[in-house]
Figure 1 (spheres, protein in one colour):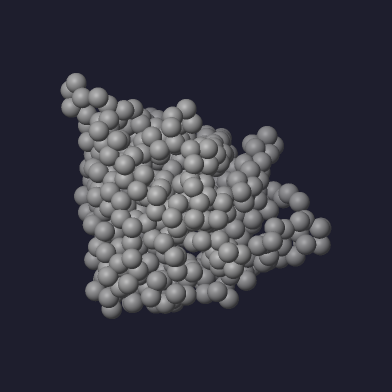
Figure 2 (cartoon, rainbow, N blue to C red):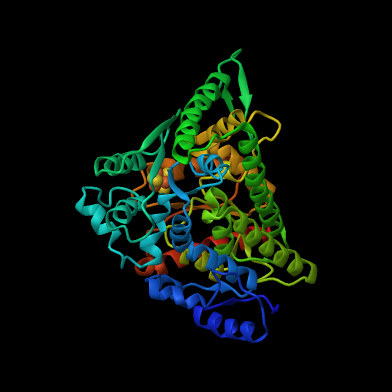
Length: 460
Ligand code: SF4
């Protein structure tokens, strides 16, 4: 059941859902009215606008049922591992075992937004000495202490080293509270010395061979811990099969991003695209279903492009967005202001790049971990952002700062200067807290001014 593409409110979605039911449109087991998630306390959903396709409904229901899915997995005898910080590498290993489900407790980052602070997770973090001088990932502490968000994993694995101070401090606090963590080190990726053996990583960065070897040894420790945890041998064959599956997700996302960011009329809004990209990091706790959800979304996008339909104005300003927003509503706001997303760097581009399938599995995974844009220099990160801006022909850049995030104090300015020097496109830096209601007007004014600047430049 297809309709003219448009964005709808939660209540309109419910009416449409009833129509879909009457028309006999099949729903997955986790399907249903989107508004039922309000009963779980996800009140921000009332203020968002959604794409009206069945594919988008499936995507949202998939996202919003993750915690139920984790509990069901545990009831079915699966073991649950919490992977933290590396965003995209350790879950590929964990999902290569057939009795393990991995997820990122870091995802509690968005709970203060989705529940509009009602879960009290940030107050709990405050009471544990992790106050607002830390980024919203501190909500994770509250989620562990209350046990109300996700089932507490039996094993926790966290990367340290070239990670932000926020995460290191919060994860150490968690460990101190009685949630033991297996730490593995990711070094700061450095430029190879002249004459030093180097490796070209997926995504284009380079690293010295010795750093790849070091990460491989660290991941080997993780592999051993996962084997003991699962009571299974994690063979090369299993890892290779896991990498192939992860690449299926990454290829679908690559197609989706290429088509959506490149289409004349925007065929899928920014919010749904943000959620879709997030599926890359741990498959929303069900790898096969994540693939099915992305396939349906991609089919919808292809169909819309073929029909010449889409959303937003056809002259919408093409915006490249850097960093994820703590308040999801800001993605809607950008579109209200006359923009559309044409390119993103949400801090996990390494989870979108394909993992080499022609290398031994641990070598390939070590290379992926080192390709993380957040473990290298800002210049590296900015150069990749420039490449992507060119690729998607973006006309302006928004860098959204994350309140309290240690890396955000100066990175926006540095990235902005590099981008402007290289590409001469307007750059806007804004700060997006978990709830933006009180600053919505100021954000709107700044985003509208950016869109206006893009329109003016087109006249030249
Ligand atoms: S400070 Fe940045 S990188 Fe660190 S946990 Fe927060 S958002 Fe992630």
